[in-house]
Length: 386
Image 1 (spheres, rainbow, N blue to C red):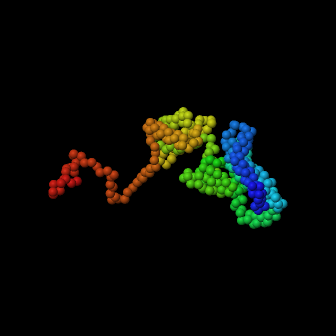
Image 2 (image 1 turned 45 degrees about the vertical axis):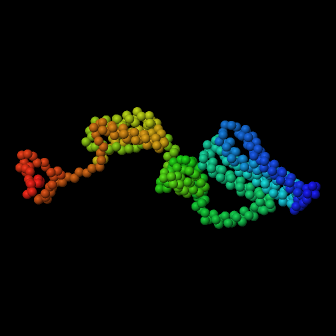
């Protein structure tokens, strides 16, 4: 039994192999308990007031925490099986690489919870700014971590970066649009033109709901539910209307009534519409917002009244319902006043006609009983004919 225990396989005894397997098995069994315990202590420090932050931290820090017992187990195994100096050196570098990987993995996972915590305390961290901060932070952690691991294995990062710098300069000359869109995205976020979820419209570019402000493009979901990927420079160089930041929603109409409407009828219509708007809680009232109902002008075929007001809600569906109710009310007010809505029409006046021109009336005159032509005439077969 002792001989079997001390039997060597590639310089490692059977006993050392069994001990290494037992240590690795124990690390695998306790890694979930270790992760749960560490996260419980972190949550206790953060406080129970933010369950969403706890979920984010658990999702981000759980995997690297579960990997720490494996790293400790591999370190212990290396102390057992490292017999030759060369193997001891290689295992030492493996251990240092795993420890470095774990540390940067923890930093990588900590970026999202850290940015989320800062976003609750600093107004500058909107959704778009938080997304960018998380992306840039993770990219920096990956680059620095990769450089640190390469340095452990004796690979100098400085000369590699110097060589890549020349290549990067050549690439930059052909990637001007990329950098322009990147800078434009930074200005969009810094100026807080819009956030994820905002309804925007850029003339001749796009209209819809912002889903993601990316490094190069912004994804906007159009009203046909198709995604539109717009370069950031297009949204930075053009005027953008952000409808989601409206305080109130406007209704601006021109109501045309017939020209035979009297002055008293016009006053009744104007006063009735104004009373409806000012007496309805769905509309804002002066001096908070303007509200006008005025006879505006004499148009080609109508007398125009301007209706200009704002609703309290900015939700599109509610605004449509309020606007529909206003349309019903205006129609009833106009009809109650004894007037009607005008429509485009044209009259043709003929001063003279050439001699001998035959004029046909629009309607045939109805024959009377005294008119001899009213007698019924029959054809040879006895059928009546005109």
